[in-house]
Image 1 (tube, rainbow, N blue to C red):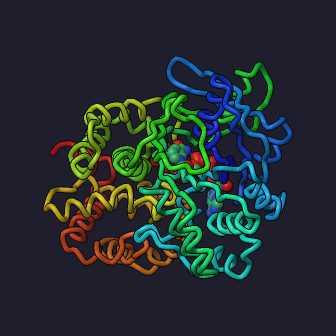
Image 2 (image 1 turned 90 degrees about the vertical axis):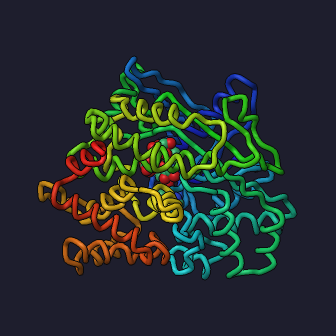
Length: 464
Ligand code: NAI
Ligand code: CS2
């Protein structure tokens, strides 16, 4: 397998499944891992330590570390060059290329799922098709290379937090192909499988403190590639791998025909409540998700968001959603994780559609209440204003931060600000801003936030 995106999540999730298969079930599936954007130092460090690194699970009983040894090769697009990456992907033994490149790595329009043909990386790839920079461009160039060599295509498996992530990956690769070579596009359409997956494990960004604790666990040996995570892990995979796959089920993954109901459940209940807690918690002065869980109003509001506003919109069968919500709240309360609200608040333009807006569309169609979701969206709007409730400025990290900054700078605080942000159609589409019930609910929630602040506004929800 080749994995694009050697970030914290891959290291503590997909690599852990493969390691378990190799160490306990004799599997010979391994990885070539690749970083495309950033993470140069990580790849160099990994090479320096014989491609081994540590994963520590943390909970209230302590930290437990294991060594992961399934990475066989590590590359960086900038350090090793595009040719080396394409050759790795075109290697005859490669059957799967998986991805954790964050939502923005797909260069797509989150509201419509279409390729952003004017994205700078895509514009570059269209003029340099055999030396691409973007993930869709690399997948396409590697598939073209395999086809020209008479090799079967690999299966493309997205492990990013998007509904129908396989379909998103497929759309962007095929649409990019259509702009270059119609015949190649139709070959990809016919020959390449893009299964979807639901992935779950809370893996906070690594901090100096994480590395220090891992060093302590390792008896003083530093591991700059180490990562720490919660004990829980889940992986639901659409079973469509024409070129074969590891027996992931032996390591606890669920292989299913249709993963969408699980993806929607996780994205709306877990990620939706995570984003709600991230924006409102940050504004309320809570640095970590576990700090939000110390505030009973935040706990009640998050549970209400999950059960009253997200659960009714789901199609998943046979899952006790009340139990699921309670298990999520327990996981959020894990104080060892130190999962920063500011980390989850990043890239909101890429996250809001699947975490909150799809459920809001459902409520608008059914005429039902979505107060918590409206406050979540208003929380994002207040957050991207870039000034906290103590008047301190902070930085917004988002691929659309320039557009956000312009909209914020050219609109007056209050209702005009809400109207200006609602015009971002990559986030809200054209339909939502045209629905008076939506505009009214978000505007009211925003004005409540301005007047009463985040803590009181969340308290107001939990008191209803
Ligand atoms: P990270 O910040 O540690 O790693 C991000 C990875 O994405 C890096 O390998 C980076 O090179 C790559 N990347 C960033 N922008 C890119 C671009 N424009 N094109 C190509 N590659 C790009 O983040 P982490 O924790 O590994 O999360 C990555 C993704 O994994 C998330 O966005 C999410 O979709 C998914 N995920 C993360 C979970 C977590 O708890 N950390 C849990 C479930 C899913
Ligand atoms: C989080 C997720 O960073 C975020 O936006 O909501 O990465 C979350 O930790 C995972 O999806 C848990 O599986």
